[in-house]
Length: 317
Image (cartoon, rainbow, N blue to C red; front, side, top):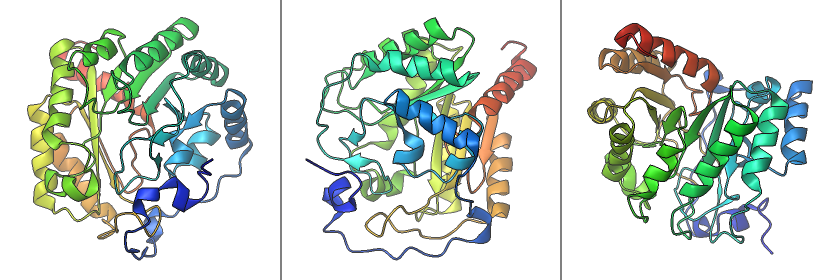
């Protein structure tokens, strides 16, 4: 029986990798340990409903702030991912269990108990399942709609690269408010950072969402500090806009363990501000570019701003 708290069992595929030194974090990305009552209440609701969160599994630095406000990104389809991205702290390997048919209901219960106005649902990659978990995403969306009809829903999906292209229609037809899929990094770094994925497949996935439902907001994000240069980041922005992506997030990569991809550098707040300005100039409706930006960070507030931006630009929400 694997113990996912032990790094060697959590990431068995990384154990033969040489250690990469973990540089000291600069002052601008240090965060305090979570201690608030709100944090503990959110944690208890997650435990009570037997739910996994990407906040914990991926070691997000914002977990204290978000959970203290009752915000959590729920991770469905288990806690073991079939991919082995070198940046990611989610456990990897062959998932030990089939999908839990009761999970969508438990997610919906937690959303209701937390009183969420906006919820983010993500997942591990499940390449062992024929549809990649598309129907499970759809079931979760429908369950939340039934219990909390006024809650807006954002999904952060896998790339469904090994599935029939039609599985994407199953997810889009469930009508999430925001469809997010992260490109994660620049194309030149895919072989070493995201070896199981393909840059242009992920880009095309988001473009197809817009073709299936032009009214659906699309979102994607990348990390910086992995070894990319400014020109390649700007090119990713161009590619995203060509795919009609509405919202881009850019955040600092933080190395989970010595076995993970090394941090190339810590990008300064001033450089993030430049990325933000560039992205808005390229026509994104919404941009979040800061050292601590993550896909789901301030997602509810950002969704409201995203909707307002479209209303202002096009005259329709």
